[in-house]
Image (cartoon, rainbow, N blue to C red; front, side, top):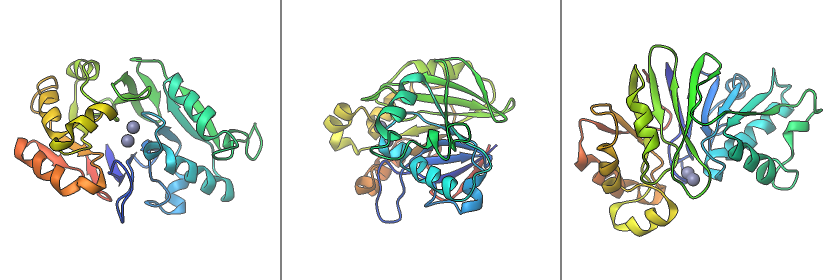
Length: 254
Ligand SMILES: [Zn+2]
Ligand SMILES: [Zn+2]
């Protein structure tokens, strides 16, 4: 399985793109940045967008991707995929003909370049050649992480979350799990802000690590650009052998 890091930050800075990952060229896992990281041909290969929640830093790139698809005669629709409350948020608050055009009716409702797909909580579903299970996490809005595997190997994606339980439990039962892509947003001195916004600091992450399957490498994403150096230094003190900060633009193979 191939995971390309399109954007790795919890917001936007100069050269620092919001979070998005592209699995095997066809499946987005979150879509904070897409056209900023891929050429038009690469964008046209995208068939599915798994969305952890509807915050802008996870969906803005989907808005611009639909724009690309609309003006380049898309091969087929992109399927915006998540649990029902997240799909409802997208319909109601994003692609609503106010914030952005309703691309689920463009060019026509039958040939629309954006379609929605709802996944049931904790039920494994086929998405392209992958198996995907959404699991609820603890964020300020309805949000999930995903267990994603291809039958042989897989990874866990936390989405945005504060301290949580269920996804770590579920991960313990998954065979072939090779990595945990997990968020950390703020440095330790901003613990209050992390708690209020339901994100993790390095100290909170080290407590979460006790609940995770042991020994898996942790691939960190979603550090806020403004605190990147400080947060990275604190993360590296926890366990440099196990914790790696994902690099934007790089492709990882499981
Ligand atoms: Zn976020
Ligand atoms: Zn969020």
